[in-house]
Image (cartoon, rainbow, N blue to C red; front, side, top):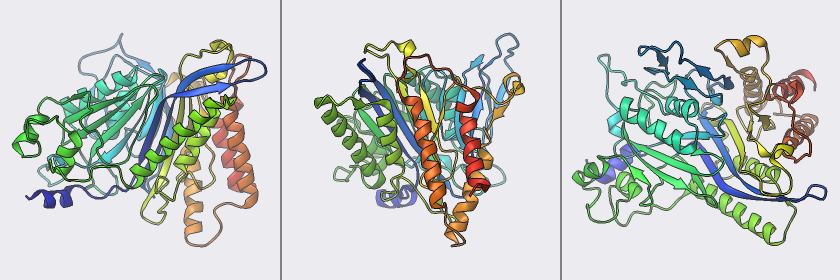
Length: 469
């Protein structure tokens, strides 16, 4: 197949998902008379999936199997089994309800991650069939993401977990419950308090990763993006590309040029579309924060960073917020995380609730519908004692919340009623303002209550939009 034809067949235009990270985001804040300085990692992701695909935000408790472990014990992923680990971490995951894996999430060690669909010149490796003509079922990228979050104690460790499962079990299989022919390769973005990594895949088991150091930022958007600045690559990929004429074997290996453009020297490989818009957002954040630092502005806070990421993920002009309600793709879930590094100011770590990771989820099918970002921390109190004792996936009632917003979006699209009233809009905005207050420094130890949990915010939103107005 000619390269131009192969590109047309295998690399459709990107249509969903954007993930962002800013490592070492600076903080300069002066609550009362004390100066608080430091840095943190800002992470954000929109999960763009078929608009009718139901989503949920689940809490998966940590488990230890060391005393009862046998070599035959397995984890049932979406399609296949893999060996169970001796211990898993406490996780919060946002996912389509029908699958085992997740689109994005976080764990108790302060690791966050998200995955995206990509397509390369090796995409045909995924198109193998069983005896019935159906796509061969392997690990979905979303399964691999969950395995990494359940086991990875740092961003780098999460990348290593991904590589192990990609190389050992391979990726592939139907990626949508309603379309059993839709399959794709994956890219991942993992971050912790000190660094981040982009991991991109090609075919069923090839990969490359790139490190994002403190002071830098990165976004991914449905296309491979690592160039010749990779930190490591899979062992056979260079020989495969050389055999196919996608790399000359002499110049430094450019992952994207080889696997997206077939080595063509004059291809335009710069960011375009949503990827370019996302990069511009991050550059603007850097420029604005540097300006505030130069002016010694006391308002460069974790809350400022998280609210700016809210704006990014609600950008529908660029398509970062996807809103094709009737049978197309929608931003069916959204996550923002703030991961603080060790504070360096005069407010001790133990006296400021800004010094532990806070994760915000919409739990609704459209970040622009009016739904607020609601805070989750791993100190959240679970709903019942049985949730603590049993091996359950607690959904915080987000399936019900998602269904309400989906019904409203359909009503608006069919011109049956407005999505939200002005009164609801004001109340939902006030709710998000209250949710963001968890990021404000305080001089007392933060002590979560049942009314400050993610589940409590979800229930408050349900009560507000279900029948109050």
